[in-house]
Amino acid sequence: MSLASVFLMVLAVGGAFARETRLDTLACGTHSMSPGERVAIQSPNFPSNYPNSQRCQYEITCDPRENTYLQFICPVFNLESSSDCLNDRLIVTYKGSSSTKCGTNSPDGTITTDGWTRLTFASNSAKTAPGFRCYIWCHYKATTPTTPTTTTPTTTTTTTTTTTTTTPTTTTTTPTTTTPTTTTAAPTTTAAPTTTAAPTTTAAPTTTTAVPTTTTAAPTTTTAAPTTTTTVGP
Image 1 (cartoon, rainbow, N blue to C red):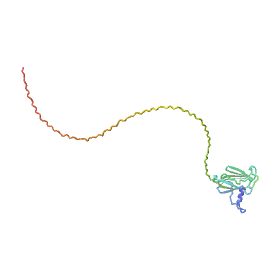
Image 2: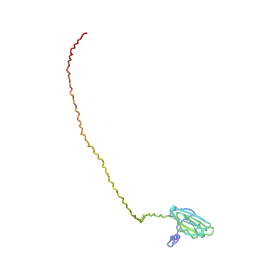
Image 3: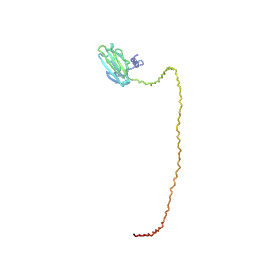
Image 4: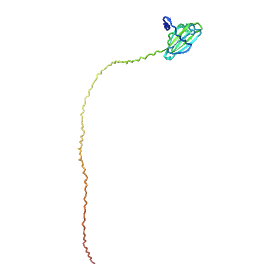
């Protein structure tokens, strides 16, 4: 069951079709929309046959473009069928993709990679057909929760096989010569006895007061002996 069929079933209420909510159809040209909004596009003169030699291009952007995507629902799609869609066609372009639709090969169910698309309708000068009507929804991209990554340490056990080769050991005993040990006694130094000087006693200074002595010289009397001079004549 196509998405267009599901869309029509949603419109049915109690076995009868509910009246479609009025929705303005976009004219050819450039348009913008917001997340949660829906727009409609259709071939010229729809629901009657489109005229010959027609060209109509729609460029639709939903902002923010990098966080949104567009979804196509086309309840009606009937263009002239031709090999490689060289006659009447609808070219659907969005980021990373471009496809050409004709006949009943509808773009119904198309989901774009971001919030931008360009649709180009063209008819030749020969046959015509009823054309198409498509609804385009803008949705926010789902945010994928980040699951924490648990890293389990890897334990590597390495088994090493060790081969031990035992080489017989030959022990050669060398005779030991014992050299007598000469011990030289260090000369003994006798320390001279230490003489301890007797403590010196400092006598207190003695003050001697000399008594002045008075000497009285006795008077001396000198008696000169008389000199006798004898003169002897010639």
